[in-house]
Length: 277
Ligand code: A3P
Image (cartoon, rainbow, N blue to C red; front, side, top):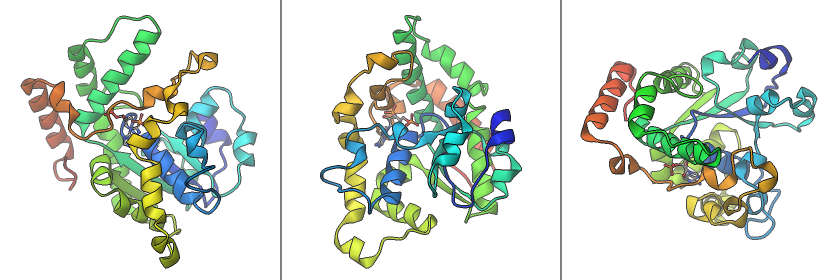
């Protein structure tokens, strides 16, 4: 955070794709990369999403800086820069939040976000030869706000409020909505980025091509996203970003009591905000 505050120089054209972990970061990266670069690649042949995981196409900028990456590399990226972040909105420096750069935020039903995170953590723990984390323990941590990047609900509310105050700066989306009407949300994202689809592009079916290219079914079945890379074994592996990609898988994992507790926390936290799940 300190490095970002001290060294990151925002540009008015920057686009920051923001999420709480496990809420659809991979999908958001893929969709926006495909929208932004739709004139540069052939959707059937040489598209970079066929050979690279979305995380390698959109810089996860606080992760990159944390690992000692140079800010001069970030400086060297051409505009508009597509960056990805898990930071809460309140932790971005004023230089970013008051500039005209834009945020696209995706949130997810807390029950699915929790279940996804629990599976993800246990995959990582297995690889590190650590015992699995019991769902009851993980659940208590989540409910008490012990999550990566801070309490889940605060993360969502920070972006929700910012989107209400500055709708041209923050586009607030729900994973469930994007899943239900992906084409409509691809158009919405493109419009938000001032890159609406032309009539010609609509006729060529570009929106559908983007939707299909970035779908869970397509991305998760590509070799690049199926193979574990032993050269970077200490890092999160590409297959770990894909599990089921469904809405409502929480029913298979949460007890009735857990469901009631999470629903109650969500209701209390979001009461009066206009946000619900
Ligand atoms: P599940 O664990 O519920 O399957 P993130 O990318 O933020 O780490 O989120 C991971 C979640 O998004 C996982 O959810 C993963 O399966 C799902 N996901 C990954 N790629 C997706 C895609 N292209 N479309 C829809 N969901 C996707």
